[in-house]
Length: 258
Image (tube, rainbow, N blue to C red; front, side, top):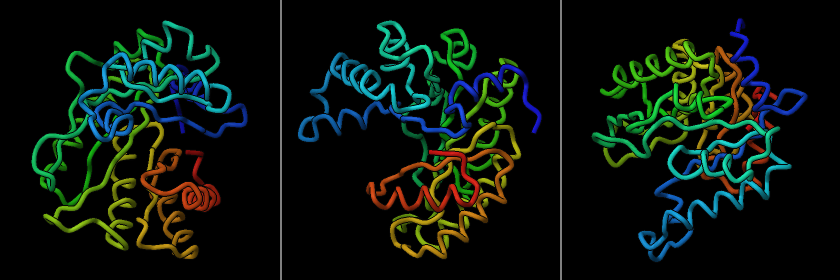
């Protein structure tokens, strides 16, 4: 692949010296409130969330190659107080949390008042876009246009783009599982990595309903062949032991980290 010099620099800043990614995702907003105080999420203050993110970033800085943070609560704060060490990469989210529209036709959008240019000015190593996507959804064309717009802005700024597509079912009340999920995850990689991103943050092709090492390996090999860019694995909702096995399978197939 051919990368602009700024993109090369940004990707190297987000990886270990040997070239793999170990990125701690801490760009959570509303769902962080639910994790911190499940019985009363609304009582969690902005200040409490900032302090939590500062503590986590400072404590895990020696272990992670980079941190994924949001522009509302985390990114500027950990730069300002020194929690984020200079040697660690900074990936900043550009999307607003959640989605709009029907659950079977989800639409992502850029956070109000935020942009690729602002992320670049604050010293971000890379940008991240979360994109709800199912090739069969009626919202597909709008989501693709959003990706192209953000990718174009990243290209103009020489800023790497980490793309995080999240799948969903187009059938109301019917979850996306098993072989259908695999098809969606692989086809999503095939389509979207051709439209302008530098790293794919891929869901593991199977959900927890499939625990078969041979099917895992075959699906990850298919995902590797589909993606035109380096790809990493999202932990999703897997438990630690399961995710370790998924990650090992994915890396043997060609994944570049998690």
